[in-house]
Image (cartoon, rainbow, N blue to C red; front, side, top):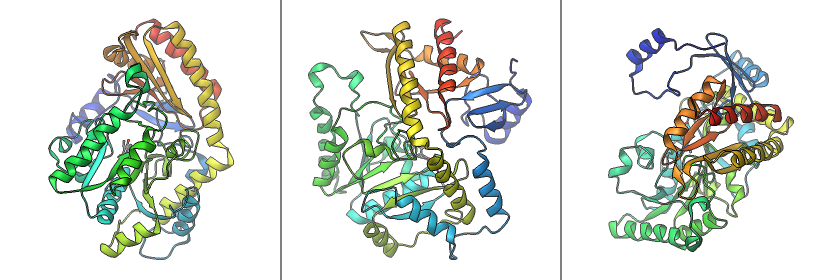
Length: 427
Ligand SMILES: Cc1ncc(COP(=O)(O)O)c(C=O)c1O
């Protein structure tokens, strides 16, 4: 069944929230129902969701729905009362982190989590400067927008944030395989902060480099960057908003690196769509921050939010979704690499667990970004009933990041459709 754009609803949306509010696809979808890895549009057409990480344990997961519904029908409020849900959820979640990461601040969004993390780091170090990648996105509050070199205007004018080029093994020529030249940019940023008189508060990175095009950084790079920053008194903030909760085949994407962060931020998949996010750090940093200024966030960590979070963890553990992400992820990656053998346009395939980058190039030798082609293929995939998206500095990297209940049969369908769409040039 073909789908038609719901033009009246689109026009009402434009009038209600503006034409620039982002929408996926040339012909925007009107989705009305979800179940597991499937979503349905208003005309009844079914799509394989190979993109969304918010419905982490599957769209409308019955266990999460039940937990939220039961708690909503019992009691919901803010966190200035004792409640078992909050305490047991935080105890359970922090047990998944290495020492000394055993205390939390709960928030509603990833942006708020990063904002709180900045405040923790700046309060602890009494310094302001933060280093990020030069194609980063970490959220939308004013302070966090300063970190967003991908497309936030505040990043262009701030004095408190500097970006460095993240190394991608696919694009590194043999002579610069050494991480030294990239670390040099970090050294320069530290010097600049000193010259500006604001000092170094830390480095904030998504260890999966999800918004940077899911680049593979050379082994040891993240560790070396963090060592540099720590030697100058700065902290390491790991943004696990996309890479967390088993997505990469480990609980946390920083576990792929030989380093324990000082602060970790969480969000998106945490409540399976119920707003739930937070900051995990040491008791030392959290207590120091709370003594300096009270942190209160009305909706964060309420009984319903924590019920959602606990149900997500139940499903992850009981259905062994992290091992499954590793296993199905390897399976799909292998199939994508076979497609690479068939289609010249696939320059590189990268993945960790269930997060994939398929980098498209118009010329393999030159690695010329295939931006236009990527856009056409993403839209053609949608028409074929498979949802994916694209990222990277040139928007030429297909991004595949399905709910964690994605199985081999879903991977097979994705490959079949991608093969068709690439063969037909996205037409
Ligand atoms: C890596 C990363 N950090 C933080 C955020 C911000 O999260 P939120 O939209 O929940 O504020 C995002 C959102 O896309 C993100 O990708």
